[in-house]
Image (cartoon, rainbow over all chains, first blue to last red; front, side, top):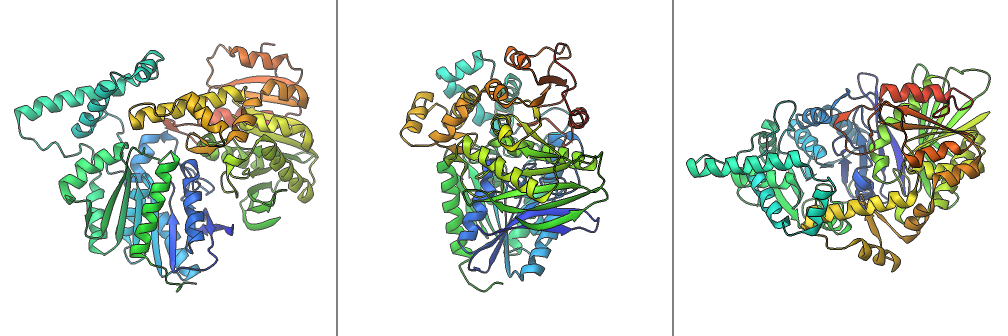
Length: 309
Length: 291
């Protein structure tokens, strides 16, 4: 293991930190791994550590990075509802720090090609950062990228398509002993269940009464499709990895893929869906599948060049 | 020791780097050094993390406690166990004695680099089980625990239950029952606890640890902060048994449980920080529960 502490001081005098994984032989590619939402640079169940070390073993320089207020970095985030902080992240709260890290990597290590990887909020941060500074970034890998904005205050909204998918799941579970046991043990989120049933029923009634477009997400991030198109325009390669059991996939599939993109592989993007997997790719086979997909995509678009550092 | 980065603020200095444990693996560490000394004796705190995903969730709050302690004159060292956080290795292959050995190595580093008059150990959740076991071996004179796990076996069973819940959510059914998971573990396979793959050695050693036994053996002054209890100050039976031990004091604190998903983000809960600092600055436990 060849790793170093990474620090960068911003104009505000505060230090952003991370961990650099150094390869034995440089491939010509540098990877910036972003935190998943509010989880720090280690990532959920050390996913970022594992990815970083695997990428470094394959010759890539990797930085696992904490923006201000996260992990080992200085500063602190406001005390606020978690949803509110996620909301800010989805609208670019960590983009400036991400670009600061990108610039410093380019200066310090004479990086020629840089890609960003992020799960959930890290995915949208990566996409927004690349759209803002396309000259700095050549590729994006997003895992379970967030296409909607979290609800802050007011009533919680859910897409009718997502609600319908959950309804099917509830119907399937009616014959499951485990599901009934969870209800008896009080482990079921009844508020959420009621919300889903209500949304699905309202959607069914309104669909039969009108021809309203049900693919529209009620809380779609207005920056999502705009920044996605920027990446396409600037020839920035984008791999989108989703777990099939993840709500993020349901939202992306109905609100973005079917509505705007129409096909899983298109201009500068590829969508990969891992069967059964959840949002954070918790089980081992899902992680392995994600790594395989990333390896395949890197080999296709960022072949080994030995040209760096 | 390989100190790679230092950062100085008005009242503290932070150093981060990696050092090697006895097994030759690189461990991440951070030292929060006070620039203003408090009192005549140097009190140092060794932070022992929570385990598994609870470590990831609680990282920021423990870091903020480290900063607050350093600002008030205490020396703090944080580190990641082998296979955890930023350290080298695979957690799933290790057992409690390996984690205890990492605590010893970290304490040795502190003793070598600084004059330490009093060593305290801070820990939380399942990390407290490991810390309590290691305390006598590093001459710790005081322990401060946040919501420690009192029984490793129960904690492990809760992890198994979460595994089944995830299966149900993702596969719409349980594809591997609790018994099948345990069989797999006994045959040399691994089991997934909140995303972390662990082997039989880890599971067995964790399941053997009971806080009351470990504290009885340690004979060290312990302050235990219980979070989010009702205002009447009632502790569950498993906790009440702990105060039968001569040097244990329980304290209530109205603060959210931040080692899992939380609705409200607060990286330095005021009540918890205040109580922890008060207790850290006392030489002995301040109050017996129910006294």
